[in-house]
Length: 561
Image 1 (cartoon, rainbow, N blue to C red):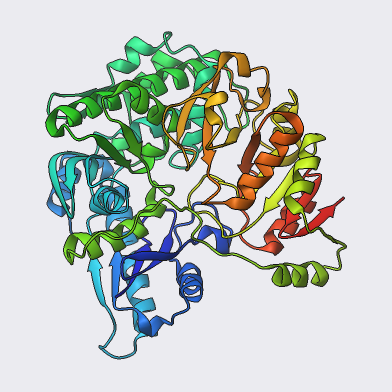
Image 2 (cartoon, rainbow, N blue to C red):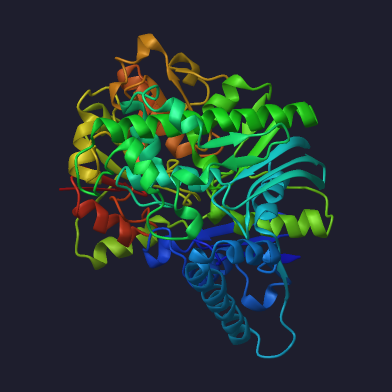
């Protein structure tokens, strides 16, 4: 059975191919059309996934789509009739835009299958693709389930319990009572793009004092004993679906917002800290409710808010759950995978036979393909047999390298296939990469990658973190050893690297450790601010020559400036 999973209705358009329960390819459209967080129909991604899977469009048996547009329609209509100020934005997004999205899908479908013999299309509720779809590819046979985002069809939070091939929902919250929209508001207030730059807000939060505004922010959002989310809308405007998400009351209390290119003032940093702190505390309340209701040993969390790795770290440390599974593409990009697996396991009731522990499900390029691109650009490159040893030696010297190896990872975190690497022992390395390579805000932290077998020598984390989605503390006596990946509050967004999943990446970290005594690298995504992660050798060369990178390691080839 061949299933094509698609997310095209929301941002981060994605496609995947699942064959007999195995994920054989997944691709984000942004990597191909070079439009970050794109909402374009993923036609390029579909083609690439078919190519990677070695099949044609006619081999597809079913199409699973991560939206069911008719879901909660009466709730939407009732809401907009009670909030007439939101009618025109609502009509534009939920009627005009929705019609355009569906028309685009069916136009593509009819272009592929000219007769009525095309594959059956299954429209699946958005939160089921988030939560249930993630559960079905998790390593757990039983887990508490939590989905949190801005909104799907209209739902914003989903609570339930998964066992085997079944999921049970026992709690749901609806727009405008939304953790995602709550956090988008402070993101906009801090001068960032909402529903796009929330990671910047999370990184800014440790620069402020959450106690300054904590009491006021705690009034804004609450969770009742059943897990229902309640937002005090007097602080917000997002419920009217307008551009400015905060109200006049918000501005009177917290002061002037930051302009996108303005300086960060104390009120911006303190408010980011307070929103982050309150978000963590409220989600912890939900987690405790889930545990008491299910007594499940593990938690599966999904949706855009689950990319908040600081929150995830606290869930690991402060709840009774043994561990937490977050898909590497935990936002809307992962709903293509979730839709396919909800169809395969949840609707068709096939036995679960796949665990999404391997994020490297994208394109790869061999040395011959890489050399062809290098020669086509009339560039000189050295072929290096021991490429990992050479890369480690360069890192030990303090060089910054672009690292392009093996199949591309899926999701927003670079995990050692399309990464920029540096030695975290150099104190000025963070500032240098932010200024000369990434061209981004100076406060932005960088993540460490450490060997699975030795990460506990540097980091206070009892569980694995292969997808870089759990923040932990750097051990106090190691903070001065790896200053470039230690944030101002002593934390780090760790990736644990296993030899089985990515042998080349594991080897370069091991060899750096052999040279320096510190088997940890600074790892950030191979891109510059505002662009998607590089996908192809051509993308890698372009990024290399337009930034302050010292070397490019691509396959077995080494390029320098």
